[in-house]
Image (cartoon, rainbow, N blue to C red; front, side, top):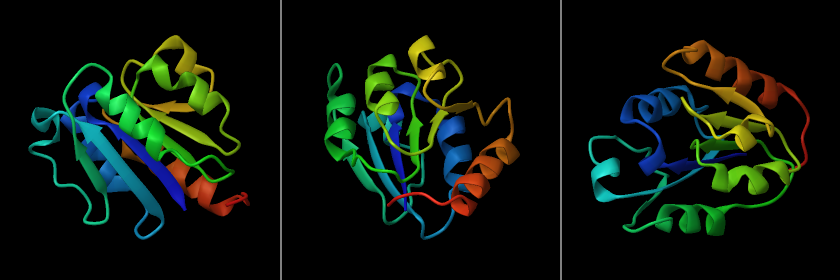
Length: 136
């Protein structure tokens, strides 16, 4: 199972939509947090846990609480450096989806901007982690 944490306040709707189009069906656990404005206009997967929150770092707190450590693949849809320690300590492969990730996030996994790198870059990462053995 791939764990997907989406910081809707930190990523454009176009990038979120691109990520959602490439998620493998039935093999993901999606948790989303952000302001009502950031959540609006995006069709979220039915099984996604969507949290509407307001306030500084409120989305970060929801996503950190939802994080499950382990060897499963982790997708962080955020450029927020506050997630760098979480990602660095993750035992499995990490994908950061962002157009401008904090420097600390660039060092913890693969970084893809689906708008500039294209959807195939995301698909290749998903294909690679789903074909590779990992501890779940």
